[in-house]
Length: 227
Ligand SMILES: C[S@@+](CC[C@H](N)C(=O)[O-])C[C@H]1O[C@@H](n2cnc3c(N)ncnc32)[C@H](O)[C@@H]1O
Image 1: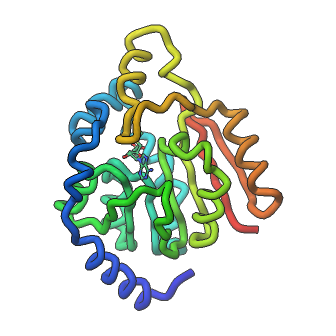
Image 2 (image 1 turned 60 degrees about the vertical axis):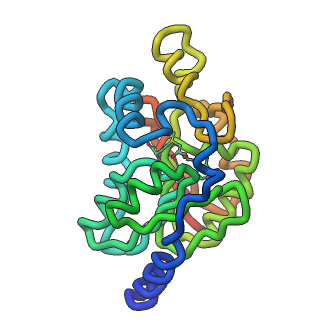
């Protein structure tokens, strides 16, 4: 775990670093409708989750121990529910996302967030716990690299990942999901199911991490800890 003073210092430093304008190139990127603002994102995700969108965050929050885990890193945060909860608990929070609209909302609310493409060499700061929700499929081809990078900086990595693929459904939900799959890097068709997700994570762990998971509705919640 990390001492409170260095933590505060590091957070302050990162806050200074991330006060940058959204690059003009990012403004030209084409996103699915859902990625153009947080309101649209929540609306569409609430339809896909049949009104249970916010509960997804609660299922991850109950796994956190605010007495032990004082510094939370959220990757691909998108929404600000985890940041809000961390603030209420007095925890340090640093979020990363590639989407300038989501970054802008979070910054306006005063959260420490960084515009970054996590597929590149972006360093992940030291933390007690890293969280990634609904986003692992964006990294399916570099899964080992990503998990090792996160586990080198954080003691624990909690992943919440959809394992039922809406996009393959031949109905209105399927159409919405298919039209919502461009986070700025083109359409993405890859999705995990329970088997492929756990098999891939076990394979890259090679006995170095403890991996446990539960299934809750359409999602797997995976808890990865250093051995
Ligand atoms: C389906 S949304 C999930 C958002 C939120 N975590 C949730 O569960 O509602 C995927 C998120 O990943 C972000 N994202 C996708 N590719 C990324 C990348 N290469 N680097 C950083 N963020 C990325 C998107 O901008 C978006 O916020």
